[in-house]
Figure 1 (cartoon, rainbow, N blue to C red):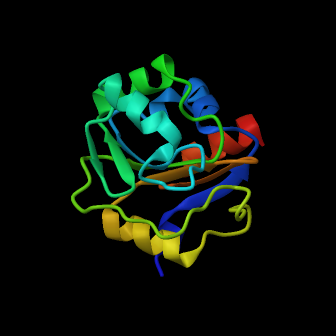
Figure 2 (cartoon, rainbow, N blue to C red):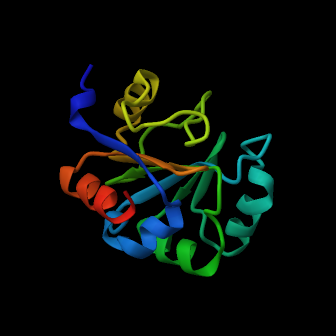
Figure 3 (tube, helix red, strand yellow):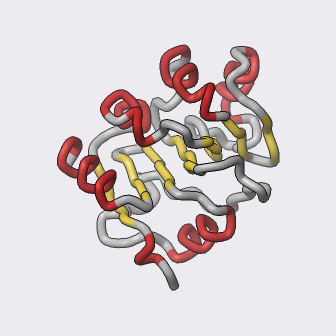
Amino acid sequence: MPSDMFFHGEIDANITEVWHSFPGIFRNHWLVITMLDSGPEPPKMTGWLENLKKADIVTQSFGNASLIEPTQIEALFTRSQTFVHYDECFLFRGAPKVPIQLNEHFTAERCSFSKGVPDILVQEMLHIGATGFLADGGGLNYVVDSLAVSTALKSTFG
């Protein structure tokens, strides 16, 4: 299992705080949101998805995921209070080529990435070509393909 391609951890932050401290992590990346505010029905995402669509931030929705283009990432973080708690998103260097359908969620209150990452998540990241994963909720679980990013997150948010 090529899980050694990724660096992981659990920090005391949420996704929005990571963006405000390290916007470069998101620069030139596509974002796929798979859960917002831990809604009971991920496709509905407790109304947040509709707000993002109205603000022309969501490029496309498929299944329980919403695609955000690199040009809309700043608007996502500055025009809405989107990532508050119990959220998940994947980072891509280009537009994802396959639909994303997660049957499990990995927010920090469900599991901790401080010691490892579930194999199913690593397999999914490899399958869809994701370069990063962030999930907040009682802390923030992250998986990234950069040691420098992982080190910066740990040193800032410990």
